[in-house]
Length: 497
Image 1 (cartoon, helix red, strand yellow):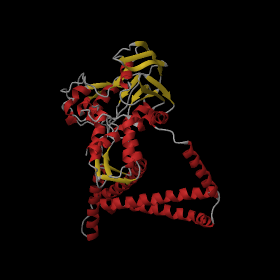
Image 2 (cartoon, rainbow, N blue to C red; image 1 turned 90 degrees about the vertical axis):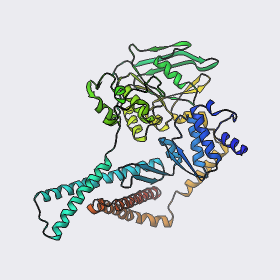
Image 3 (cartoon, rainbow, N blue to C red; image 1 turned 90 degrees about the horizontal axis):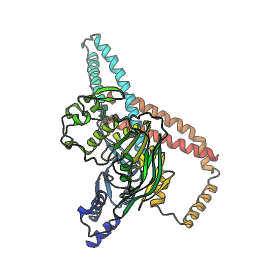
Image 4 (cartoon, one colour; image 1 turned 45 degrees about the vertical axis):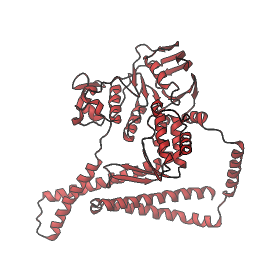
């Protein structure tokens, strides 16, 4: 058992088997939990938000483990890149789905595509059902008499359609987060400059001779594994601590908004209402007064939660409170230190959209690779021991920091195989020419099937039967996938014909 334990610890890069759990960092404790799960040699491993507080190196290690796992696993995670690279099936729990869950085989991007297809079909079906209900309501207003079986049946169906429409609309209602950062609008190009800045803690150099400018409308991704000085750099920029040497020049009256990974300054006993609107019953945002109940709703809180103490909130709810505070500051530079911890994917998407539209400068520290790639225009990597380097993109940093180059022999072998394959694929075979002659008609038939199935989904009886609606939706997706397959094959053959 001791040997298996050492192997599990080594696989999680926990190098000191004699260390106590209390002495480990948050990320190391996460890896210890994974090692403890591995040593049981499970048939099924359950994993709940494993990437919170992990650095990029640990996430890549976890990703490799999951991809190569010989056992089944089920994971709750908001890390979309991890889901994309490791998962083979995605399940989203949501009241907008007839069975309360949406299941999709494939990667995260495939799930997004299929979910959008489903939601679009559902929107069209709801619109069609609403039109039918309006016609039936108009007929009912004319006061039909239920004297015949046919008339009575129509009245019953009309009320059944109304119930179905109410059910569909109630499923669609979600608790959304409306995030929107307002910049100060200043015209200054150079906002802050680190000039030969150094910072150490005891004998440990964190930053050494850092020279870097933050300019207007820049989105800087600050990269590095844990304990390389990312938070120290943020605190220096915010003016919370001072450098040991060098200086930080800031534009006159520079306004900085700072979302901290952990904010111990928040009074845990205060109510949600007093934290969201500390000056009374309203806040001033974008030049207008907004009542605290309306302001709270923008961040997914209900009126009944306003008197709830901050300490009773979940991690995600606390993060939304701190985001609300930063939104009121209209900063020139917005600093976000691990803003994605504890947020669900819906809130993440809302946050990303707000940051894309933000007109100021952004300095971002996050382990969310999806967010970094989507938002950042510049990349500064902290390498440890005070060293730093600039990178063209996230992929370059990850490649240079973690991934060993493959041998030239493998590269040559792969190139040779590709060249050979390309020669073989230059012309169509006899069977492929026959296939090419028939494929356009196959596409027409496949598209007609999609149209027919989508029309079936608008039927009132189908709308009232969640099982039948779900089955038809699966058939629609299968039919659409066949259309896409045929188009891809047609394009492949056409290029070689």
